[in-house]
Image (cartoon, rainbow, N blue to C red; front, side):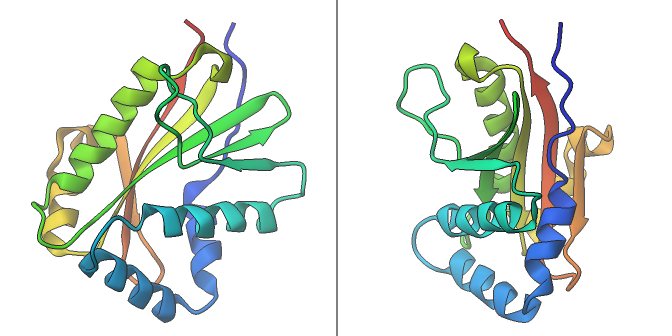
Length: 174
C-alpha cells in the first residue's frame, strides 16, 4: 500500500525565497550560470533554508543524504515530515552549454531516482527540478515531449527572469 504524501509545494517555496530581494538573487543566479563550476549547491542551501524557515517546524531537511543504491551519490536535499519524505534533485543551467542540457538533466535525475533509490528511502515523493534563464534552455524545456504531455511542469519566478521546471512523481517500495 502506498503512503500518502502531500509533499512540498515547489512554486510556493521558490516564490517565498524570491520575495526578499529578487533582483539580487537573479544577479547571483546569472553569475552562477556564467561562472565556472556548478551552482546547484548554493541553490540547494537557499531552498532548503526556505523550507525550514517557512515550515511549521515539524519538517526536517537533510542535505546530501546518500539515498542511492551504491552509496556514492547524494540527493540535493530531502524534506521529512513524520514518515513521509520528499527528495529533491536539481539541475541548473550553465552558460556555453547546449540549451537542452537542463531538461535532459531533469529527465536523467528522474530516471536515477526511479531506478536507484535505496528501498529504505521509499516510498518518497520526488522532485527533479531544472533552473534556466537563457531563452534557448527555456525553449528546450517547453519543447520537450514530457512538458507537452503535461508531465513536466514549469513556471517563471515573479521577476519573470528565472524559469523553474520540474517532474513530480512517487517512487514506491520495490
